[in-house]
Length: 356
Image (cartoon, one colour):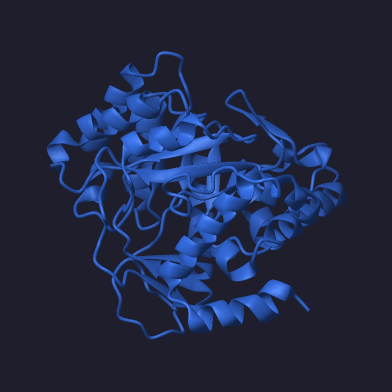
């Protein structure tokens, strides 16, 4: 019997509002991580193995699995993730201005589909507050900072908005992500268009004196042609990588009848996310590192993304449905596959399932 899936999750899903449960989880994890109990989590949740170690962008990752942006927007539990076994974490999305996000309810569970719909709208405390949070909280794993546009900022001034957060938080992020793919900020996805995106990337590249890794996060709903346009910009501005993918506005094949707007995450996104990863890997001939996210619930899901081109992975909805033991289960499976297939390290497996 799985304590979380068989006992805790049914009670949580039945008796709690999704957003309230999320807030409680972050608050609790934050308190534990800042107290004396933090390291006591290590033997319960951590799994280490030399085959899982990877180096990317000059950063050392003990394992490739991380927390996706959106889970810990304000870095409230930023010290907890390493003790829960993750190899990296990404905070945000953070905007220049603090903002409450969209009206509630705005977070919906779809248990039959192992999915979540959210229209949070970049609710966060803003770049200045995030700076104060990170000043006193140094993680033992690489930390990414996901940057977004404030709702009150016009699209034509988006680059200034991104630049403010980038410069304010520059000393505290190991890598930065330009998020232009959330469906929950009006007009944001228009910034994926080449001309608008080029302006943002040009401004940030100019303000990156020590060349910290700069990535972009794209939507799964882009056409292949639109993805290729983004890849050309990645090459032009020498971006460090790409995150594939954000949530989707598609509702294909859902068992749940729910007429709610927002981004869909979880199991239904798994195949499309992997298709996008494979396309990027093949188009760039493996030269552009990919962070794979979308529908990772098991070791098999993680392995599928790795062999189709993902060097690193992130989970969010899978962690909600599978619980904290998902990390060690996935990592143990990856080690078994690497040994079974005869790979000497994780990087050797990346893209091995993509035909040339």
